[in-house]
Amino acid sequence: MKLQTVRQRMLNTTMIGTAALLALAAAPVMMLVAPTEALAQSLTGSLRVTVSGDGGAPLAGATVMVSSPDSLVSRTGVTDADGRVRLAGLDPATNYTVNVTADGYDAFGAGNVAVVAGRDLSVGYVLVSGAGSASNVGDIVVTGTSLAAIDVTSAQVSTTLTLGVVEALPTARNYQSYLQLVPGVKPSNGGNPSSRSGVNYAEAGGGIGTSSDNLYYLDGVDVTDPVTGTFGSNFNSEIIQEQQVIVGGVPAEYAGGSGLVSRVITKSGGNEWHGSLNYYFQNSDLVAEDQNTTSGGFDTYDFAFTLGGPIIQDRLWIYGSYQKKNRTDEVLDVANGNILRTVENDQDFSFAKLTWQATDNDRLTLTYFGDPTTISGQNSSAIINRRDFSREQGGDNYKVDYTRTWGDLILNAYYFNHEAQIIDVAVDNTIRDNVTYRNAFNSTLEQRQLGGRGINLEETRNREEFGSSFEYYLDTGFGSHTFKGGFSFADNTNFQTELGSGRRDLQLAGPDLQRHDAGLLCRVGLDGARDHHAGLRDLPPAGAER
Image 1 (cartoon, one colour):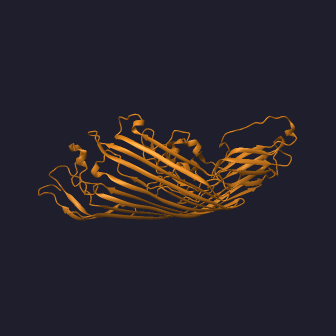
Image 2: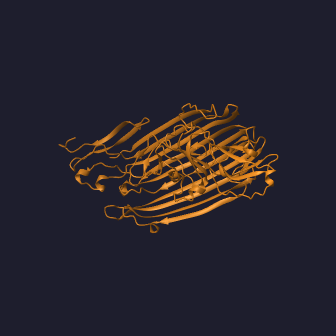
Image 3: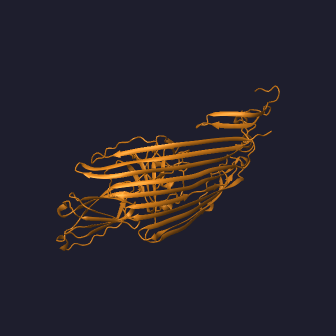
Protein backbone atom coordinates (compact mmCIF):
# COMPACT_ATOMS: atom_id res chain seq x y z
CA MET A 1 0.00 0.00 0.00
CA LYS A 2 1.31 3.43 -0.93
CA LEU A 3 0.51 6.78 0.55
CA GLN A 4 1.62 10.11 -0.91
CA THR A 5 4.18 12.10 1.10
CA VAL A 6 3.80 15.87 0.96
CA ARG A 7 6.23 18.30 2.51
CA GLN A 8 5.54 21.99 2.40
CA ARG A 9 7.72 24.66 3.75
CA MET A 10 7.26 28.39 3.58
CA LEU A 11 9.90 30.86 4.57
CA ASN A 12 9.00 34.53 4.58
CA THR A 13 11.71 36.91 5.68
CA THR A 14 11.58 40.66 5.89
CA MET A 15 14.79 42.64 6.05
CA ILE A 16 15.18 46.34 6.67
CA GLY A 17 18.56 48.01 6.49
CA THR A 18 19.95 51.45 7.07
CA ALA A 19 23.48 52.73 6.83
CA ALA A 20 25.24 56.05 7.04
CA LEU A 21 28.68 57.22 6.07
CA LEU A 22 30.07 60.43 7.48
CA ALA A 23 33.34 61.96 6.35
CA LEU A 24 34.58 64.36 9.03
CA ALA A 25 37.87 65.44 7.52
CA ALA A 26 39.91 65.31 4.35
CA ALA A 27 40.96 61.81 5.37
CA PRO A 28 37.55 60.14 5.72
CA VAL A 29 36.33 58.78 9.02
CA MET A 30 33.37 56.44 8.66
CA MET A 31 30.44 55.75 10.92
CA LEU A 32 28.39 52.60 10.32
CA VAL A 33 24.99 51.76 11.68
CA ALA A 34 25.08 48.00 11.24
CA PRO A 35 22.33 46.96 8.82
CA THR A 36 20.70 43.64 8.17
CA GLU A 37 20.29 44.27 4.46
CA ALA A 38 22.45 46.03 1.89
CA LEU A 39 21.43 49.45 0.63
CA ALA A 40 21.11 50.67 -2.90
CA GLN A 41 24.53 51.41 -4.33
CA SER A 42 25.51 54.42 -6.39
CA LEU A 43 25.45 53.68 -10.11
CA THR A 44 27.52 56.75 -10.94
CA GLY A 45 30.99 58.03 -10.15
CA SER A 46 32.75 61.37 -9.95
CA LEU A 47 35.95 63.11 -11.02
CA ARG A 48 38.04 65.50 -8.94
CA VAL A 49 39.87 67.65 -11.48
CA THR A 50 42.83 69.83 -10.52
CA VAL A 51 44.01 72.47 -13.01
CA SER A 52 47.37 74.26 -12.80
CA GLY A 53 48.74 77.16 -14.80
CA ASP A 54 52.14 78.74 -15.31
CA GLY A 55 54.71 77.56 -12.83
CA GLY A 56 52.36 74.90 -11.49
CA ALA A 57 50.24 77.43 -9.59
CA PRO A 58 46.53 76.55 -9.05
CA LEU A 59 44.39 78.03 -11.80
CA ALA A 60 41.07 79.46 -10.59
CA GLY A 61 38.17 80.16 -12.92
CA ALA A 62 39.01 77.47 -15.47
CA THR A 63 35.98 75.79 -17.09
CA VAL A 64 36.05 71.98 -17.11
CA MET A 65 33.61 69.88 -19.15
CA VAL A 66 33.48 66.07 -19.24
CA SER A 67 31.48 63.93 -21.68
CA SER A 68 31.35 60.38 -23.03
CA PRO A 69 29.54 58.72 -25.96
CA ASP A 70 28.41 56.06 -23.46
CA SER A 71 26.65 58.57 -21.20
CA LEU A 72 23.49 60.61 -21.61
CA VAL A 73 24.86 63.45 -19.48
CA SER A 74 27.82 65.78 -19.65
CA ARG A 75 28.97 67.85 -16.69
CA THR A 76 30.55 71.30 -16.53
CA GLY A 77 32.21 73.06 -13.60
CA VAL A 78 34.51 75.95 -12.75
CA THR A 79 37.66 75.53 -10.66
CA ASP A 80 37.88 77.24 -7.27
CA ALA A 81 40.73 79.24 -5.78
CA ASP A 82 42.73 76.04 -5.31
CA GLY A 83 42.27 75.08 -8.98
CA ARG A 84 39.91 72.21 -8.11
CA VAL A 85 36.45 71.17 -9.23
CA ARG A 86 34.40 68.04 -8.57
CA LEU A 87 32.02 66.70 -11.22
CA ALA A 88 29.53 64.10 -9.93
CA GLY A 89 26.74 61.97 -11.36
CA LEU A 90 28.88 60.52 -14.18
CA ASP A 91 28.04 57.14 -15.72
CA PRO A 92 30.87 54.58 -15.53
CA ALA A 93 32.93 54.47 -18.73
CA THR A 94 36.56 54.46 -19.82
CA ASN A 95 36.19 56.85 -22.76
CA TYR A 96 35.43 60.22 -21.16
CA THR A 97 36.85 63.38 -22.71
CA VAL A 98 37.91 66.21 -20.41
CA ASN A 99 38.05 69.69 -21.99
CA VAL A 100 39.59 72.58 -20.04
CA THR A 101 39.47 76.26 -21.05
CA ALA A 102 40.72 79.39 -19.28
CA ASP A 103 41.35 83.01 -20.23
CA GLY A 104 44.93 83.52 -21.40
CA TYR A 105 45.59 79.80 -21.80
CA ASP A 106 45.39 77.38 -24.70
CA ALA A 107 42.41 75.03 -24.63
CA PHE A 108 43.28 71.55 -23.43
CA GLY A 109 41.61 68.20 -24.05
CA ALA A 110 42.31 64.71 -22.65
CA GLY A 111 40.66 61.50 -23.85
CA ASN A 112 40.18 57.99 -22.49
CA VAL A 113 39.56 59.22 -18.95
CA ALA A 114 37.92 56.60 -16.75
CA VAL A 115 34.99 56.99 -14.35
CA VAL A 116 34.16 54.13 -11.95
CA ALA A 117 30.79 53.76 -10.23
CA GLY A 118 30.91 54.65 -6.55
CA ARG A 119 34.44 56.04 -6.74
CA ASP A 120 35.81 59.58 -6.49
CA LEU A 121 38.83 59.54 -8.83
CA SER A 122 41.34 62.39 -9.03
CA VAL A 123 43.06 63.68 -12.17
CA GLY A 124 45.21 66.73 -12.78
CA TYR A 125 46.12 68.85 -15.83
CA VAL A 126 48.56 71.69 -16.54
CA LEU A 127 47.60 74.42 -19.03
CA VAL A 128 50.05 76.32 -21.21
CA SER A 129 49.60 80.09 -21.41
CA GLY A 130 49.21 81.81 -24.76
CA ALA A 131 52.69 83.32 -24.45
CA GLY A 132 54.25 79.96 -23.87
CA SER A 133 52.52 78.40 -26.85
CA ALA A 134 54.42 80.69 -29.24
CA SER A 135 57.52 78.56 -28.81
CA ASN A 136 58.13 75.74 -31.21
CA VAL A 137 56.90 72.76 -29.27
CA GLY A 138 56.09 69.50 -31.05
CA ASP A 139 52.81 67.67 -30.47
CA ILE A 140 52.77 64.76 -28.07
CA VAL A 141 50.04 62.22 -28.73
CA VAL A 142 49.02 59.88 -25.90
CA THR A 143 46.86 56.87 -26.76
CA GLY A 144 45.28 54.08 -24.71
CA THR A 145 42.69 53.55 -21.99
CA SER A 146 43.73 53.79 -18.35
CA LEU A 147 42.27 53.44 -14.89
CA ALA A 148 45.32 55.10 -13.34
CA ALA A 149 43.34 57.85 -11.59
CA ILE A 150 43.34 57.33 -7.82
CA ASP A 151 40.51 57.60 -5.29
CA VAL A 152 42.25 59.18 -2.30
CA THR A 153 39.00 59.27 -0.29
CA SER A 154 38.52 55.50 0.09
CA ALA A 155 40.33 52.54 1.66
CA GLN A 156 38.39 50.11 -0.53
CA VAL A 157 40.40 47.28 -2.13
CA SER A 158 38.88 46.46 -5.50
CA THR A 159 39.50 45.64 -9.14
CA THR A 160 37.48 47.13 -11.99
CA LEU A 161 36.94 44.94 -15.06
CA THR A 162 35.57 46.04 -18.42
CA LEU A 163 34.37 43.94 -21.34
CA GLY A 164 37.39 44.94 -23.41
CA VAL A 165 39.69 43.54 -20.72
CA VAL A 166 37.96 40.21 -20.07
CA GLU A 167 37.38 39.42 -23.75
CA ALA A 168 41.13 39.65 -24.33
CA LEU A 169 41.83 36.97 -21.69
CA PRO A 170 41.28 33.18 -21.74
CA THR A 171 38.23 32.92 -19.48
CA ALA A 172 34.69 31.57 -19.71
CA ARG A 173 31.94 33.86 -21.03
CA ASN A 174 30.15 34.64 -17.75
CA TYR A 175 30.55 37.17 -14.99
CA GLN A 176 31.25 34.51 -12.34
CA SER A 177 34.39 33.40 -14.21
CA TYR A 178 35.58 37.01 -14.47
CA LEU A 179 35.89 37.05 -10.67
CA GLN A 180 38.81 34.65 -10.95
CA LEU A 181 40.86 37.39 -12.64
CA VAL A 182 41.03 39.22 -9.31
CA PRO A 183 43.97 38.47 -6.95
CA GLY A 184 42.95 36.36 -3.96
CA VAL A 185 39.89 34.82 -5.64
CA LYS A 186 39.81 31.07 -6.24
CA PRO A 187 37.47 29.02 -8.45
CA SER A 188 34.92 26.58 -7.04
CA ASN A 189 33.20 23.45 -8.29
CA GLY A 190 29.80 25.16 -8.24
CA GLY A 191 30.68 28.23 -10.32
CA ASN A 192 30.75 30.48 -7.24
CA PRO A 193 34.36 31.77 -7.03
CA SER A 194 35.42 32.55 -3.48
CA SER A 195 37.64 35.14 -1.85
CA ARG A 196 40.12 34.32 0.89
CA SER A 197 38.72 37.32 2.75
CA GLY A 198 35.40 35.52 3.30
CA VAL A 199 34.46 34.59 6.87
CA ASN A 200 33.16 31.18 5.74
CA TYR A 201 35.92 30.57 3.19
CA ALA A 202 37.35 27.06 3.15
CA GLU A 203 39.93 25.29 1.04
CA ALA A 204 38.30 22.56 -1.03
CA GLY A 205 41.56 20.98 -2.06
CA GLY A 206 44.14 22.03 -4.62
CA GLY A 207 43.33 25.19 -6.53
CA ILE A 208 39.69 25.58 -5.50
CA GLY A 209 37.86 27.02 -2.51
CA THR A 210 34.31 27.39 -1.22
CA SER A 211 32.47 30.32 0.34
CA SER A 212 28.88 31.45 0.91
CA ASP A 213 29.87 35.03 1.80
CA ASN A 214 29.77 36.60 -1.66
CA LEU A 215 27.34 39.35 -2.63
CA TYR A 216 26.24 39.86 -6.23
CA TYR A 217 24.79 43.16 -7.47
CA LEU A 218 23.34 44.02 -10.85
CA ASP A 219 22.66 47.71 -11.48
CA GLY A 220 22.64 48.40 -7.75
CA VAL A 221 20.28 45.62 -6.57
CA ASP A 222 21.24 42.47 -4.70
CA VAL A 223 20.72 39.37 -6.88
CA THR A 224 22.35 36.95 -4.41
CA ASP A 225 20.29 33.82 -3.84
CA PRO A 226 18.88 34.17 -0.28
CA VAL A 227 18.78 30.39 0.23
CA THR A 228 22.21 29.26 -0.98
CA GLY A 229 24.20 32.48 -0.59
CA THR A 230 25.50 32.14 -4.16
CA PHE A 231 24.68 34.03 -7.36
CA GLY A 232 20.94 34.08 -8.03
CA SER A 233 20.76 35.39 -11.61
CA ASN A 234 22.52 34.82 -14.91
CA PHE A 235 22.84 37.09 -17.94
CA ASN A 236 24.80 37.66 -21.14
CA SER A 237 28.24 38.96 -20.16
CA GLU A 238 28.25 41.31 -23.17
CA ILE A 239 25.81 43.65 -21.41
CA ILE A 240 28.48 44.56 -18.82
CA GLN A 241 29.62 48.17 -18.87
CA GLU A 242 31.85 47.59 -15.85
CA GLN A 243 32.27 44.92 -13.19
CA GLN A 244 33.80 46.00 -9.90
CA VAL A 245 35.06 43.29 -7.54
CA ILE A 246 35.58 44.40 -3.94
CA VAL A 247 37.66 42.14 -1.69
CA GLY A 248 38.64 44.48 1.17
CA GLY A 249 37.62 47.68 2.90
CA VAL A 250 34.00 47.00 1.98
CA PRO A 251 31.92 50.22 2.35
CA ALA A 252 28.94 50.36 4.69
CA GLU A 253 26.34 50.23 1.91
CA TYR A 254 27.38 46.61 1.19
CA ALA A 255 26.08 45.29 4.48
CA GLY A 256 26.71 41.59 5.00
CA GLY A 257 29.48 41.44 2.40
CA SER A 258 31.99 39.44 4.44
CA GLY A 259 33.44 37.84 1.30
CA LEU A 260 33.88 39.42 -2.09
CA VAL A 261 31.34 41.85 -3.57
CA SER A 262 30.65 41.74 -7.31
CA ARG A 263 29.07 44.91 -8.77
CA VAL A 264 27.91 44.86 -12.39
CA ILE A 265 26.75 48.02 -14.17
CA THR A 266 25.02 47.31 -17.48
CA LYS A 267 25.18 49.17 -20.77
CA SER A 268 22.51 51.72 -21.72
CA GLY A 269 22.97 52.28 -25.46
CA GLY A 270 24.22 55.44 -27.16
CA ASN A 271 23.51 58.18 -29.68
CA GLU A 272 24.50 55.79 -32.48
CA TRP A 273 23.13 52.31 -33.11
CA HIS A 274 25.59 49.56 -32.25
CA GLY A 275 25.24 45.82 -31.93
CA SER A 276 27.06 42.52 -31.94
CA LEU A 277 26.40 38.99 -33.18
CA ASN A 278 28.47 35.95 -32.27
CA TYR A 279 28.37 32.17 -32.23
CA TYR A 280 30.74 29.83 -30.41
CA PHE A 281 30.87 26.05 -30.85
CA GLN A 282 32.88 23.24 -29.28
CA ASN A 283 32.63 19.47 -28.89
CA SER A 284 34.68 16.61 -27.49
CA ASP A 285 36.42 16.06 -30.86
CA LEU A 286 38.04 19.50 -30.58
CA VAL A 287 39.70 18.92 -27.19
CA ALA A 288 42.26 16.46 -25.87
CA GLU A 289 40.94 13.16 -24.56
CA ASP A 290 40.53 12.99 -20.79
CA GLN A 291 41.07 9.48 -19.42
CA ASN A 292 39.74 10.42 -15.98
CA THR A 293 36.33 11.79 -16.95
CA THR A 294 33.00 10.02 -16.68
CA SER A 295 31.71 11.85 -19.75
CA GLY A 296 31.35 9.98 -23.02
CA GLY A 297 31.50 13.20 -25.02
CA PHE A 298 29.90 16.63 -25.22
CA ASP A 299 28.61 19.26 -27.64
CA THR A 300 28.13 22.90 -26.74
CA TYR A 301 27.24 26.12 -28.50
CA ASP A 302 26.78 29.74 -27.41
CA PHE A 303 24.80 32.19 -29.54
CA ALA A 304 24.26 35.85 -28.59
CA PHE A 305 23.39 39.23 -30.01
CA THR A 306 23.15 42.78 -28.62
CA LEU A 307 21.65 45.98 -29.98
CA GLY A 308 21.52 49.48 -28.56
CA GLY A 309 20.92 53.01 -29.74
CA PRO A 310 18.84 56.17 -29.50
CA ILE A 311 15.06 56.46 -29.67
CA ILE A 312 15.50 60.20 -29.09
CA GLN A 313 19.00 61.66 -29.42
CA ASP A 314 20.51 62.66 -26.05
CA ARG A 315 17.25 61.86 -24.24
CA LEU A 316 15.99 58.30 -24.68
CA TRP A 317 18.23 55.27 -25.21
CA ILE A 318 17.45 51.56 -25.45
CA TYR A 319 19.67 48.53 -25.11
CA GLY A 320 18.83 44.82 -25.42
CA SER A 321 20.49 41.43 -25.54
CA TYR A 322 19.66 37.74 -25.99
CA GLN A 323 21.92 34.76 -25.41
CA LYS A 324 21.29 31.04 -25.80
CA LYS A 325 23.67 28.49 -24.28
CA ASN A 326 23.28 24.79 -24.91
CA ARG A 327 25.37 21.84 -23.79
CA THR A 328 24.82 18.09 -24.29
CA ASP A 329 26.79 15.50 -22.29
CA GLU A 330 26.88 11.72 -22.49
CA VAL A 331 27.18 10.22 -18.99
CA LEU A 332 29.08 6.94 -18.78
CA ASP A 333 28.49 3.95 -16.54
CA VAL A 334 31.82 3.64 -14.71
CA ALA A 335 31.29 -0.12 -14.24
CA ASN A 336 31.13 -1.08 -17.93
CA GLY A 337 31.81 2.09 -19.94
CA ASN A 338 28.36 2.12 -21.55
CA ILE A 339 26.37 5.33 -21.93
CA LEU A 340 23.92 5.73 -19.05
CA ARG A 341 22.04 8.71 -20.47
CA THR A 342 22.36 11.92 -22.44
CA VAL A 343 21.93 15.17 -20.49
CA GLU A 344 21.04 18.49 -22.12
CA ASN A 345 21.45 21.88 -20.43
CA ASP A 346 19.57 24.67 -22.21
CA GLN A 347 19.81 28.32 -21.02
CA ASP A 348 18.10 31.46 -22.36
CA PHE A 349 19.29 34.87 -21.11
CA SER A 350 17.36 37.98 -22.13
CA PHE A 351 17.93 41.62 -21.19
CA ALA A 352 16.26 44.96 -22.01
CA LYS A 353 16.95 48.44 -20.65
CA LEU A 354 15.26 51.76 -21.38
CA THR A 355 16.96 54.95 -20.14
CA TRP A 356 15.15 58.29 -20.25
CA GLN A 357 17.13 61.44 -19.45
CA ALA A 358 14.08 63.67 -18.91
CA THR A 359 16.25 66.68 -18.03
CA ASP A 360 19.96 67.18 -17.47
CA ASN A 361 19.33 66.28 -13.82
CA ASP A 362 16.49 63.72 -13.95
CA ARG A 363 16.82 60.13 -15.13
CA LEU A 364 14.33 57.24 -15.21
CA THR A 365 15.50 53.70 -16.02
CA LEU A 366 13.41 50.58 -16.69
CA THR A 367 15.22 47.23 -16.72
CA TYR A 368 14.19 43.62 -17.37
CA PHE A 369 16.29 40.45 -17.40
CA GLY A 370 15.41 36.75 -17.37
CA ASP A 371 17.37 33.49 -17.17
CA PRO A 372 15.12 30.39 -17.65
CA THR A 373 17.14 27.17 -17.69
CA THR A 374 16.15 23.56 -18.42
CA ILE A 375 18.38 20.62 -17.45
CA SER A 376 17.19 17.21 -18.64
CA GLY A 377 19.13 15.17 -16.08
CA GLN A 378 22.18 14.86 -13.83
CA ASN A 379 25.80 14.60 -15.01
CA SER A 380 26.92 12.43 -12.12
CA SER A 381 27.64 8.80 -12.99
CA ALA A 382 26.95 7.94 -9.31
CA ILE A 383 23.23 8.49 -10.00
CA ILE A 384 21.62 5.58 -11.80
CA ASN A 385 18.87 6.22 -14.35
CA ARG A 386 15.89 5.44 -12.13
CA ARG A 387 17.21 7.96 -9.56
CA ASP A 388 17.74 10.66 -12.19
CA PHE A 389 15.66 13.85 -12.33
CA SER A 390 15.23 16.88 -14.58
CA ARG A 391 15.26 20.50 -13.43
CA GLU A 392 13.73 23.78 -14.55
CA GLN A 393 15.05 26.92 -12.87
CA GLY A 394 15.46 30.68 -13.30
CA GLY A 395 12.90 33.42 -13.67
CA ASP A 396 12.19 37.09 -14.39
CA ASN A 397 13.53 40.31 -12.87
CA TYR A 398 12.12 43.86 -13.11
CA LYS A 399 13.58 47.14 -11.89
CA VAL A 400 12.45 50.78 -11.93
CA ASP A 401 15.09 53.37 -10.97
CA TYR A 402 14.88 57.16 -10.63
CA THR A 403 17.80 59.54 -9.99
CA ARG A 404 17.74 63.28 -9.36
CA THR A 405 20.87 65.47 -9.24
CA TRP A 406 20.94 68.83 -7.46
CA GLY A 407 24.51 70.05 -7.81
CA ASP A 408 26.43 68.20 -5.10
CA LEU A 409 23.33 66.30 -3.90
CA ILE A 410 22.27 63.07 -5.64
CA LEU A 411 19.00 61.34 -4.72
CA ASN A 412 17.98 57.85 -5.85
CA ALA A 413 14.86 55.68 -5.44
CA TYR A 414 14.18 52.24 -6.89
CA TYR A 415 11.85 49.24 -6.94
CA PHE A 416 12.96 45.68 -7.76
CA ASN A 417 11.03 42.45 -8.22
CA HIS A 418 12.55 38.98 -8.64
CA GLU A 419 10.40 35.95 -9.54
CA ALA A 420 12.15 32.58 -9.74
CA GLN A 421 11.39 28.91 -9.31
CA ILE A 422 13.05 25.50 -9.20
CA ILE A 423 11.14 22.43 -10.37
CA ASP A 424 12.67 18.94 -10.03
CA VAL A 425 10.83 16.06 -11.70
CA ALA A 426 11.96 12.49 -10.99
CA VAL A 427 12.28 9.90 -13.74
CA ASP A 428 10.87 7.31 -11.32
CA ASN A 429 8.88 8.57 -8.35
CA THR A 430 8.33 5.22 -6.63
CA ILE A 431 9.36 4.70 -3.01
CA ARG A 432 13.11 4.57 -2.52
CA ASP A 433 15.32 2.35 -0.35
CA ASN A 434 12.71 0.05 1.16
CA VAL A 435 15.79 -2.14 1.70
CA THR A 436 19.24 -0.67 2.30
CA TYR A 437 22.46 -2.55 1.60
CA ARG A 438 25.58 -1.46 3.38
CA ASN A 439 28.91 -1.04 1.57
CA ALA A 440 30.50 -3.53 3.95
CA PHE A 441 28.42 -6.29 2.36
CA ASN A 442 29.97 -5.58 -1.09
CA SER A 443 26.69 -4.33 -2.47
CA THR A 444 26.52 -2.81 -5.94
CA LEU A 445 25.43 0.71 -6.85
CA GLU A 446 22.16 -0.73 -8.18
CA GLN A 447 21.50 -2.46 -4.86
CA ARG A 448 22.24 0.67 -2.83
CA GLN A 449 19.79 2.70 -4.93
CA LEU A 450 16.66 0.56 -4.92
CA GLY A 451 13.42 2.15 -6.07
CA GLY A 452 13.01 5.55 -7.68
CA ARG A 453 13.95 8.98 -6.42
CA GLY A 454 10.75 9.03 -4.39
CA ILE A 455 10.15 12.76 -4.54
CA ASN A 456 9.38 15.72 -6.81
CA LEU A 457 10.22 19.28 -5.81
CA GLU A 458 8.67 22.62 -6.64
CA GLU A 459 10.23 25.68 -5.02
CA THR A 460 9.53 29.40 -5.40
CA ARG A 461 12.20 31.97 -4.53
CA ASN A 462 10.79 35.47 -4.88
CA ARG A 463 12.17 38.82 -3.80
CA GLU A 464 10.49 42.22 -3.64
CA GLU A 465 12.62 45.20 -2.72
CA PHE A 466 12.50 48.98 -2.69
CA GLY A 467 14.73 51.66 -1.29
CA SER A 468 16.20 55.14 -1.55
CA SER A 469 19.57 56.73 -0.93
CA PHE A 470 21.34 60.07 -1.04
CA GLU A 471 24.88 61.34 -1.47
CA TYR A 472 25.99 64.87 -0.60
CA TYR A 473 29.39 66.39 -1.19
CA LEU A 474 30.57 69.37 0.86
CA ASP A 475 33.85 71.21 0.33
CA THR A 476 34.91 73.50 3.19
CA GLY A 477 38.04 75.08 4.62
CA PHE A 478 38.32 72.03 6.88
CA GLY A 479 38.51 69.62 3.95
CA SER A 480 36.22 67.74 1.60
CA HIS A 481 33.35 65.76 3.09
CA THR A 482 30.96 63.18 1.61
CA PHE A 483 27.72 62.26 3.36
CA LYS A 484 25.90 59.07 2.34
CA GLY A 485 22.72 57.53 3.68
CA GLY A 486 19.86 55.34 2.60
CA PHE A 487 17.08 52.92 3.37
CA SER A 488 16.04 49.60 1.84
CA PHE A 489 13.29 47.06 2.45
CA ALA A 490 13.44 43.50 1.08
CA ASP A 491 10.86 40.72 1.33
CA ASN A 492 12.21 37.25 0.45
CA THR A 493 9.73 34.41 0.02
CA ASN A 494 10.84 30.78 -0.23
CA PHE A 495 7.93 28.39 -0.70
CA GLN A 496 8.79 24.71 -1.15
CA THR A 497 6.54 21.78 -2.01
CA GLU A 498 7.83 18.19 -2.12
CA LEU A 499 5.58 15.42 -3.38
CA GLY A 500 6.57 11.76 -3.31
CA SER A 501 5.81 8.24 -2.20
CA GLY A 502 8.03 8.21 0.89
CA ARG A 503 11.53 7.30 1.97
CA ARG A 504 13.17 4.56 3.98
CA ASP A 505 13.15 4.90 7.75
CA LEU A 506 15.72 2.31 8.84
CA GLN A 507 19.03 0.98 7.55
CA LEU A 508 19.03 -2.79 7.13
CA ALA A 509 21.88 -5.23 6.78
CA GLY A 510 20.56 -8.53 5.41
CA PRO A 511 17.95 -10.09 3.10
CA ASP A 512 15.91 -11.63 5.96
CA LEU A 513 15.17 -8.28 7.58
CA GLN A 514 12.82 -6.10 5.59
CA ARG A 515 10.83 -3.07 6.58
CA HIS A 516 8.61 -0.82 4.51
CA ASP A 517 7.49 2.69 5.48
CA ALA A 518 5.02 4.94 3.77
CA GLY A 519 3.09 7.86 5.07
CA LEU A 520 2.80 11.59 5.44
CA LEU A 521 5.88 13.59 6.34
CA CYS A 522 5.57 17.28 7.20
CA ARG A 523 8.49 19.45 8.22
CA VAL A 524 7.80 22.75 9.90
CA GLY A 525 9.97 25.58 11.15
CA LEU A 526 12.72 27.63 9.58
CA ASP A 527 15.33 24.90 9.84
CA GLY A 528 13.06 21.89 9.30
CA ALA A 529 14.42 20.35 12.49
CA ARG A 530 11.09 18.91 13.66
CA ASP A 531 9.57 15.96 11.78
CA HIS A 532 6.10 14.50 12.16
CA HIS A 533 5.63 11.04 10.65
CA ALA A 534 2.44 9.04 10.47
CA GLY A 535 1.35 6.14 8.26
CA LEU A 536 1.20 2.39 7.73
CA ARG A 537 4.18 0.22 8.41
CA ASP A 538 5.00 -3.34 7.28
CA LEU A 539 6.49 -5.17 10.24
CA PRO A 540 9.52 -7.47 9.89
CA PRO A 541 9.04 -11.27 9.78
CA ALA A 542 8.37 -13.11 13.04
CA GLY A 543 11.46 -13.73 15.10
CA ALA A 544 13.47 -11.00 13.43
CA GLU A 545 15.19 -8.39 15.53
CA ARG A 546 13.81 -4.88 15.44
